[in-house]
Image 1: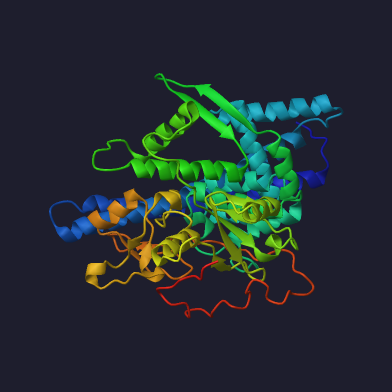
Image 2: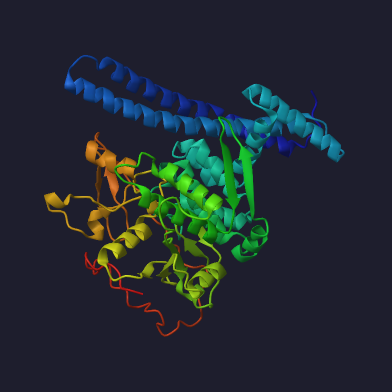
Length: 486
């Protein structure tokens, strides 16, 4: 078929097609490694402990290789989708109207949907993501090709950069995928975070770098607050509320504290069930079931200058993410007892102090753990810090002290994992949660908080109004008295 396309348009798919043998060779190499690992694992049968250990180790290596292979395969699919789209446009007659362009797009989507055996909606989304990856997210595409990023992570990157300016999108991508970037993400590499945690981190970065300020977006979204009711199966239904973040966090915290107060030897309901029952009792009867309504305890991390009204840097709400500075100032200014103020240094984003209503050290330690970890420190766990309890990494009976560097706050599931298996949390510091060593001897890093310095700095610093220069150097904080009282 004769094409009316300009010669330079044909060069794009032709260049990509020439790379196909390289991609196939890389995939073949991955398959060969996988085959060797599987053959080694299958040969390790019988009661020999060494052979069984070999089978376990090689199986884990095989699973890791499969994950890398899936990323490489996804990159290959993206490239082939781009080749097909461009080739189809070159083959077709030039579109003379919007209708012609829409028809061509419809035909491409339908063909890809049939080839992949997916719906046309899924195919359209895949083609849009492929276009984004091949045109504006080169680091993400390279990470897919290297097998260090999954397709789920790549889709999240596409979602979170969708409404950003090109420079901001490139900044988000570099933050997570370029270790040499000025403000590279700390802790686990993006590919080592479970997709849900990666989305939370990417969303937080996006909130801080969106072209429209968070203040404006919040005012618009607050007008859309609502309560929704959705019937479900088996005599159940969903009741959800779309609320400002501070209100939602306060409700969740109070329901959690009330639910925990009801727990005991004679209570058979789980914390999740109790939380739902307490909330229902509040809404239906106006009282908590069997317990007084507790005070919520939610951390609000506020840049000093934003608190003083000299900056617009977003604050951070525990277990949620960035909130407008105006919301944080209101919470602190009104003296809301449900919220604990945490001040951060405007020069590097590091926490300076944590507010508290009691001088009891154990309570301040728990609050510092919540600030340090944010959630259960087991890799990939998303259980919020409010649901977790402090736990000694090295048991007290074995000589472990009660200090931040020897404390974690695992959820009940991973607390039980620690005490009933050979999983072991290690290497916590004042500002970094513990990593974990598995029974196989592998070390898995825990997610680390990304205390981001502000984008804006004043031309003249105030004369230390909040003790900005009072933070001791690294290692100088004693292991017992972690933070001063507010």
